[in-house]
Length: 128
Image (cartoon, rainbow, N blue to C red; front, side):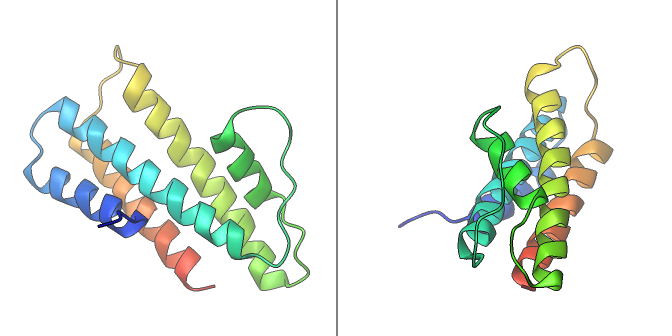
């Protein structure tokens, strides 16, 4: 059975329910980000015209850039796209910190904040 962005978000929520270690908190942030990456990609693909991405960076940066620089004429859709782009950038920054900055401490509150932001992103993307 295929896995979707909602499944990944639900997994992040399940991990947080039982989480008690920093590794688990870091995993919640990572799962929350990847759920959002896939949800935001789906949103971007359904736009009448793609946003403008820069050539610099990988697919994650290109997605957030394209969302943050929409080309659609509908003002409400453009506003949502920009918000999603900025939210993706922020969550990506959190995910990179959780995965690579091992000297910094990640606690339950960080994981809860990332998951709350992921839920907001999903709500915004699905209200389009």
